[in-house]
Length: 116
Length: 111
Image (cartoon, rainbow over all chains, first blue to last red; front, side, top):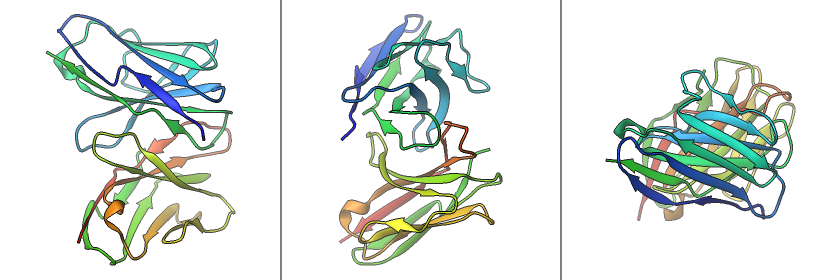
């Protein structure tokens, strides 16, 4: 089956530092990857859509200069949280799909970010 | 706009049935259902397409009413492993790849 990995699974950083999260599709090529954020006891909120070789499309209210997304290859997308603050602490989940359009998405295991 | 799920939470005894509803204010092309355990990523359950048939596994099935812009997930003879939070995810059209998650329904199954 389709597998998506994320690294790291858990990270603690100090306020003001930057954190990079990697999302990899291990056994398929993902033309599109998505980044979600989930606060405790809430739903997953789409942050941005990442297409290989082009700029990410950010959802309304998501600061593109703060959450930098790079989709350098068909198997790797990265999310960098720049100048992290405690309010950025959350569960970040990526997903990937092999093609475009409304297909099944395969989710990574998530990254728990805590900013102190 | 985010689809609204009901109920917000439900508690069951093993073997009982449950229905979870997902309602959207926008026209839908397809509906996905996911289950998420605490601290884990969502796990795909099934997809329902516009004009398609009801789909499901043995004891988990779902329906999609395009006109009402609603979907329902049916859990039959629930098992302890069914516990978790259920999310519907919706696509507005074939041309979009943005999956919008519903508000979620927490399900707890006790022995």
